[in-house]
Length: 282
Image 1 (tube, one colour):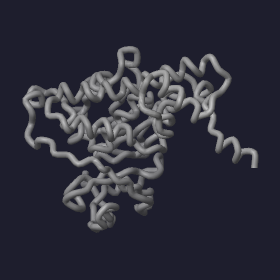
Image 2 (cartoon, helix red, strand yellow):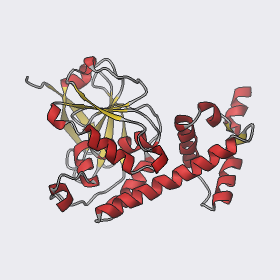
Image 3 (spheres, rainbow, N blue to C red):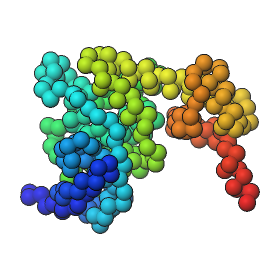
């Protein structure tokens, strides 16, 4: 079946370069999802930058998001890839940088994931679940399952959970059940791709994720024994007790999200924000 395309004009949010891109028409005709995220890699619009374009179902651009990560990864297959092993480089080729950020985020924070494929030969569901588990501590393996969907018609996609990450066969992010930017995932990938050795890349990612989860587990145990705590006090307490640099509000938001998704929304709600409480009184 012939694929029809729609041309949209995108502008690099960093250097201002404009270029027309052809996007499959089916992406815009879908009704199940809202704003989609189109990944624009280096060389697609300009030679130096990659970014995300937010587009609605009418093809109207609603915004952009910069990806600051600059990559210089080998273009040829590595020895592991020749043996059929999927490396970080290969994952980025398959799903794009933002797609990999999203896959990691979904795995850490326990969101189900669906990847649409064009043919059964593309189904590597079991392997992808193993890869996803490899970045998590032992007690969290086997959660946030990833499913492959053999479906080209977006309106016919059937999801068991609505609160899910959905990526189509063109690397477009059709749905993300979160609103925050993926700065944490971008940072650990940025550090990993600076290393050539693939096992060291995985180890670095595991360490970064384990550190975040350790902070979340400490916070969970603390919350189980108190009625509530304000954010600033909690950040100071985590830093002091775990002997880590002072937490940012973004880091605390990740911890809160982890507790909400992995343990209990009620437990996460014990973390209070003074500004929000003040505004609620107005």
